[in-house]
Image (spheres, rainbow, N blue to C red):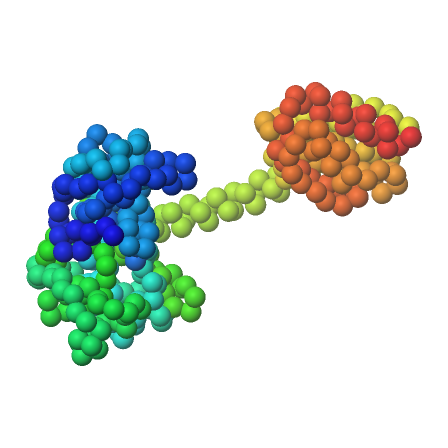
Length: 397
């Protein structure tokens, strides 16, 4: 059984231990120790990393009464080792986990809204709440949580029996039996938890919520604490500064300016589509003049510069409005977009022809017998055109 030092000493960075078992985990060397300060993934909190002597600890796994330390290189059985926790990673986890306790307690105290689950990611963390929240309610909870953080209240650890726990005002019912490890934020929260936490709420720094969404009948709140919140602020600051520099607007005008630009872009695309539709008719007439005849059918198979997928479709439709036409049009981009079409009086399956080309040149797409579109065709455009002509000839024979 591994003695878990982090339960009573979450701030501990180094320790001495003995290797009690050598094993492998997923083909990687691993060990059990008689004691450890490395925290394994549990309760929404990720594992610790660090070193055992000169060997890196790359993962820490909870395994019943023992903890598996997955290593970058083997260690000898019964070896005496000195453990060093990656403190920057551990302290980040302590900030996020303690911040979660405070924020969850704020939701519970102000709105009687229980936290159903918690997950700590690499950049942000999430709390899933039982009921839906609106933005104003979330901001009230965030203000209350930060008030407690800035009060710099003590965060204490104690272990109690189930009978003692039953008499205490725990924020939520414990899910495990036996003795319970409790984390108490003075005069604000009392919860059963096996994770690592800071000694005072002031060490959390700040709690910042970045997103609110509906989730499984309740709400999912995305947040960051301490150093993560600072990094998120810097990222948003730089993004906003770059945006206002390029758009030459004040920060307060940025949302309205972006909305206007989106509307302008949408209108420009509509205008472009109308222009392409008009030009497609003239381009179709030009291409018909260069058409070759296969089995009495005028075949247009070309790659066209300056036309996107919508433009290719418009030209193919204009071409096959004439009788006796089969068309295979490619974009000039790599990989290529394709439009395959035929006139109503031509015995050719455009969708089958497209599938034949994709079988050789890759890509995806589909359609109907008279018109099909594809994208992602890779290879020399001349080779694709030649293959199309051969396939059309075979189909018309």
